[in-house]
Length: 205
Image (cartoon, rainbow, N blue to C red; front, side, top):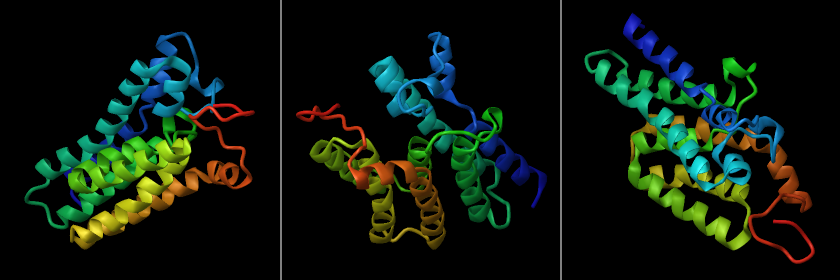
């Protein structure tokens, strides 16, 4: 691995680890890690600080997933194993968000950052994932379930679009990590205590 490839991977992790949700919340005088679900991602930012900052967090987290792979694709055009290095950049960007060195490796769940990675891999597949996500959230009110089903469907869309094998391996790793980071949500979904965006009679949103 040459120095350019190493720097691309290091940049991918360092950018992925930037906690935009936390930075925006601190700008408002709040530590997002002490409110709502205590997650630094766009969903919790939206619940606590409103739609505008939630959307901004989402956009920033998506960009930090896309940019490292895009930059690496430009800088490594003549590099052997270019696709492997780009895939590693995508993986470590998501890992950076999930396990940021700046926050003692206590980060978010990686969905928005993964969305940025998938936008680089296959924009059409992202459209399919978003449809699955929206359908799940509208029908059930659970953003976590939408994230789980939407991310899992990425493997199907990539397969149907006949993308290169390395994209499937990368997506498989990212989806697995997303599901692992959602283990508490999965437990709450199974026992019926997960918070819903819908107002349920006798319950909470």
